[in-house]
Length: 130
Image (cartoon, rainbow, N blue to C red; front, side):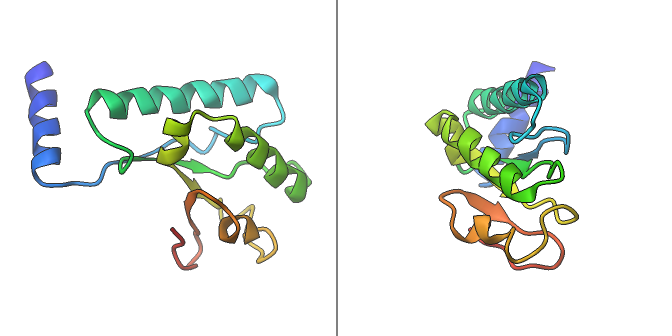
């Protein structure tokens, strides 16, 4: 109900809680299918609307997986870079990229995280990069 939601938002703000939304693993900005890409974009935009409606600034993050490798990890990473550049600036500020440990785990593949202009974290016991 509305009162509970307002109370929760008030509690979050008063206690300086960090809020993150980790979208489903099927939400991939590097999807080869235009439909899957558009669905992912729609979902991420919706999550941004939710965080904005809560009155949260860009410290509230949307965690997305790097996405599928589609048998060519380098092309998949390049596709992600292209689609990321096309996002609204407000959404870019919220995105935190997860490396999908079982897909993008080699040092070559995780170099995207070291040479990026966005927040990210690495799974599989790797150190967090921000």
